[in-house]
Amino acid sequence: MMVIPADLPPELAPVAWMLGSWRGWGMLATPGEEPDRVVVEDVEADIVGTQMRMVTTVREAVTRGEIDPMLDAADGLEQVIPGDVLRQETLYLKVLPGSGHLPAPGEYEPRELMASGSDMDGFATLWAGVDVGPRAQLVSDAIARDSQAEDVEHLTRMYGMVAGELMWTQERTLGGEEAVIDLSGRLMRTAHARTASGEEVDGGVLPPDGADPRFDVHPGSGVVPPVDEGGSSTHPVSPDGGGTTARPDEQDTPVDGHRTSGGTETSSVADDGPSEGGNHD
Image 1 (cartoon, rainbow, N blue to C red):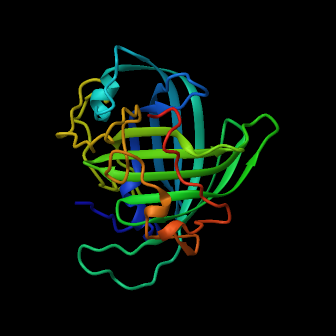
Image 2 (cartoon, rainbow, N blue to C red):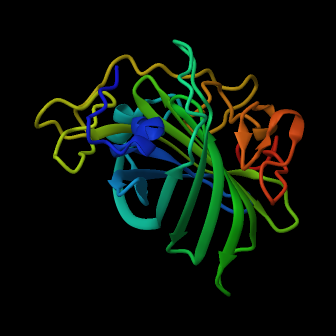
């Protein structure tokens, strides 16, 4: 059960489940026929005014052996040694006003999201999205890039809370190509965010006091979604609770003023949907 502090900005209540410090492992896609790379990921999600600031850092990893895609965050971290920073992004996210009506018990009101971010690879992105309970989806609304950046046309990102872990995937579409999974991660919370008064935003299980989150933490049973039939995807997670990333056009939640059911465009940039192939079979 999540405990919401009295001085938490009410605008952030729908996404309070994402607040805190997170660490875990994931997979980064590589071009061509090269195998995907195991990476270590850190996410710092804190409160800035009435917005949430998310700083995501992706580091290369040296593995201690072959890593099982079904490993939870703690067990996966035991198998890797973090190295140099490969990617880093800072994103500011805000929740748009809701209807003002209290949902029925056990139900959630979809809340529209807007975000802006930039990274070390020369991209600045405006995002539109939706949050429904402990699950959020973002799609790129506009992408600006410098002269040396890749020709990225569209991005889709999903976050979800599963068994106390933050799971997320990102799909991207390069110019003239189909969308493929670019990055995925499975992270455990290592610290709670705090409000201006210093009160913790209690949103999940923490490692024991004094524990090293890389090596000696085993939070719970680590419920893992099943792997897609016939697939051997190296990406560890699916935020929607399935073995593969859900297609945005299978959702029935509003994004940027539209509904995504039946393949409707979710922003000013059309969503081509994820690839069934790519480097993630």
